[in-house]
Image (cartoon, rainbow, N blue to C red; front, side, top):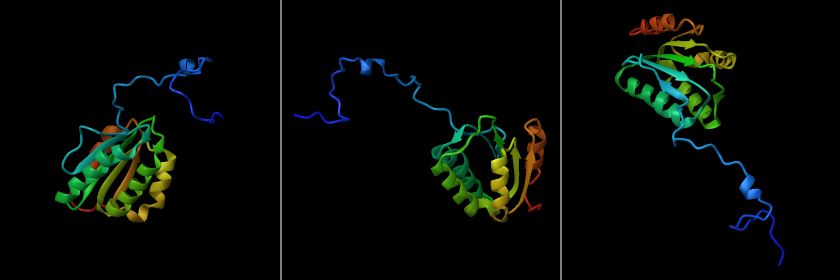
Length: 160
């Protein structure tokens, strides 16, 4: 009987290959979210931090669903996005949902403050600028308070 390549028995091999394989690091069962809602969030303004590689479930739960909740009560909203130094971009499914969100909700933005924004995000925002309804401003990472004051000052009427 020929041995099939790729199939292994449940017993460890005599070469010890199974014993020397690296085990994944143990985790607490939870990974830190790639999108975190910041405490400055209120009924008009969603404030988030994006870090690492953005996962769809984090984007949906902590960004899109919260914006949908705001827009169910108000016509327009503000958003502040702080890009952490660890930000790497979006997983494909998160990128698809982000584009869908921009197309569906972008016109409802009153003010958008982007802090520590990577060039790829600035470029994406410029390409999709026709889909955004309000103003977008970019701030350095040291200007969080200024960005927060500006974005929250955008309540009510369209300013741009």
